[in-house]
Image (cartoon, rainbow, N blue to C red; front, side):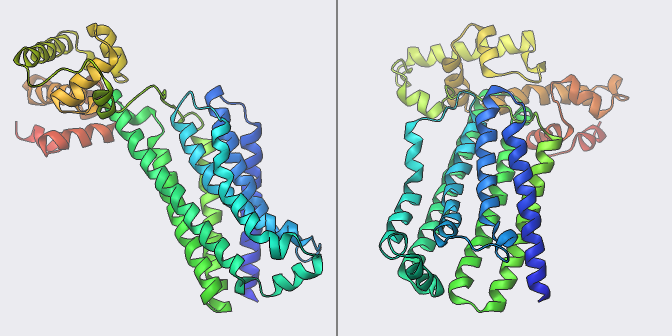
Amino acid sequence: MGQDFILEKATILAFFIALVLALFLFTVKSKRHNKVSNMLMGLFLLILAIHISVFLYSDYIRTPLIFEQLRDQFMLFSGPLLYLYLISSMYLDFKLNKGHLLHIIPFVLVIIIFIPRFFSVSETDRMVFYQSYHSHLEAKLYAFLNMVTISFYLILMCVELKKYKLILLENYSDKRYFNYKWLNQLTFLLVLLFIFSFFRTAIIYFGNHEEILNIRIFHTIYLVLFVSWLILKSLYSPEIFRAVDTKHKLVKNLYLNNSQNINLNQVSDQKEIQEKIVKLRQHIEINQSFLNSTLSIKELANSVGMETQELSILINRYIGKHFFDFINEYRIEMAIKILEDPNRRSSHVLEILYEVGFNSKSSFHRAFRKYTRKTPKDYRAKF
C-alpha cells in the first residue's frame, strides 16, 4: 500500500511539473529560431503529461478504452519530437516541412495493428481485450516497435550531436557560447530514461507485481528529477541556446564535393598550399586574431581575404587541425611566453587566460594540459 502511495504521488508530481513547463514553453517570449524548439519540447512534455495523467482521474472517471489506448500510444511521438527538438536547437534556419510527417509512421503502424481486434470492435469486446492485454500479440508488437523506435531516434540524436560537435570545432574558437553541452547532457539523460523504460516494459511482460511496482516507482522518481532539471535549465540558462547555420558543412564533405580541390600529386599545387598556410600564419601572428575570444572561421576568412570554405579546408585538412585547436595553439603559446616571463610573475592565471583570448578557466586549463601536459601553475613553477 505504501509503494502504491509513493508511485501515485510521484506520478502526480511529474504530471504537474511537465504540464507547467510545457505551458511555459508554449507561452514564453523567445527569439524566432527558439520558437520551434520551444514548441517541440513543449509538445513532448505535454504528451508525457497526458501519458501519466491516468493517476489523476482513474479513481473518479471511467474514460472510453479508445482514449486510454491513444493516451498510451501518443508516446510514440516522443522520439521524433526529441530528435526534431535537437535539430532545431542546433541550426538557426531549421524549419518544419512536409517531409517531417514521415515521423508519424510508427504511430500509424501501431494504429493499424490494433484496428482488427480493438479499434473496429465494440466497447464490450475492447473490455475483454483489455482484461488480458499483455498476452495479446498486438500488445507485444507495440512494445517491441516502441523500443525499436526510441532506440532508432536516440542513435540519430547521438549521430547528429557528433556532427554538430565537429562543425563547432571546425568553425569556432570557443564552444562555450553554443548549446552542445546542454544538448549532450539532455541526450545522456534521455538514454538513461530509455534504459529505465526498457526494464519497466520487460518486467511488465516477464516479472511479478512487486517487481513491476518497484521499477515503476524508480522510473517515475527519475522522471520527476528529469523534468525538474529541464525547468532549472530553462530558468537559469534561458539564453544558452545559440545555434549555427545549416550552411556549415563538415570539411570532409566540402573536400569531396569541391570541384576546385587542389591536387596533392602536383608539386605546383603543394607549393600553392604552403604559400597560403604561410600567409595565414603571418596574418594571425601580425594581427593577433586569436585574441578575439569569439573568433569564427568566417571572421578570420574575411580578414585574410579568403573564402570560408577554402580556409576551412586549408586548416582542417592540410594543416591537419580543427579550427578550434588551431586557434587555441596560438593562445597557449602566448600564455606560455607570459608564464615564462620573469617580469610577469605577479600576473594571476585568471588574468592571463583572458589576456590570451580564453573566456573560461576550465577551457584554458584543458587546452593548456593538452599542449603541455601540465597545469599553468605547474608550468610556471619550472621557472
